[in-house]
Image (cartoon, rainbow, N blue to C red; front, top):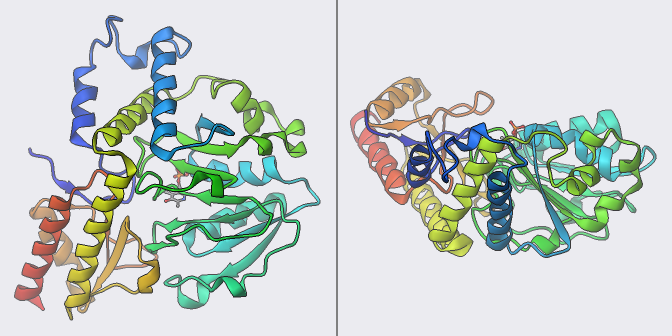
Length: 361
Ligand SMILES: *Cc1c(COP(=O)(O)O)cnc(C)c1O
């Protein structure tokens, strides 16, 4: 069987070159007589993999020296709990901007642990738009302001980090990290589960400004929940997910070979623009998101005849275009077009959509 064009929202497509490298590294790797999965995380071979991955990530995102990079377990969902626990005391308020399903989950977790305030919630637009910043009710002295730059389910992306007051900006970048350059210095914390744009599921990247590691709340936490302890322990308080870390490193090296994040931004912008143009030009397909906030990574779209959804998906799969079913909360279709999904894949989807419309609309 040949490889399909995979539009999965996550775990998502990985670059073929990376998969071929993994294959070449099994069953014997770097003269060790074993694979990367089978040796100690404290071995010099693995330490060099881990250090190179961090160095490449720092180079790709131009991460300043006053930021620590952590490679943790538990996915972005675990960060929903660790952020309030680490960055705020029990008497402090944490602010959340909610523009979709993931932000909703993040603030729910924060509310269970700390005083959490929703500065604005885009529920009124059914999460197809972002409330204007003048309407945000931010808390003076908030421990941080959390937002979700790219809402993976609704396909809503805030393309520029908002200029906020003194509160450090905390961003769940799970589905947008590495899709374009970002100015890391604008953020207190950036975090991302790996399985969209970094690598396989099982590892989570946390980029945190070092002064935030000194916040009091961490001192009373169990070490395994403390960012400060993880930073001090080089993300090796316990056995890290070594295989996922190694694959993430291969993806970072691949991104560098593609020309880095400026080149990815150009490619990703081109992919998204071509798909949205095809949707907008057709009376049969539509995307509900306000144009200024349309995601480069996740493109939901509906058919004018929802009764044809099933046939669209069956025919698309038969044509080698897979995982296009929309999230159950939104319905319709969703094409996730992360870094490893090529313009060729997007072009194949666009021609399939035009052909389906011609035959079935
Ligand atoms: C996928 C996703 C998550 C959940 O990630 P897990 O690693 O499954 O915990 C959280 N936030 C966003 C924006 C996501 O896309």
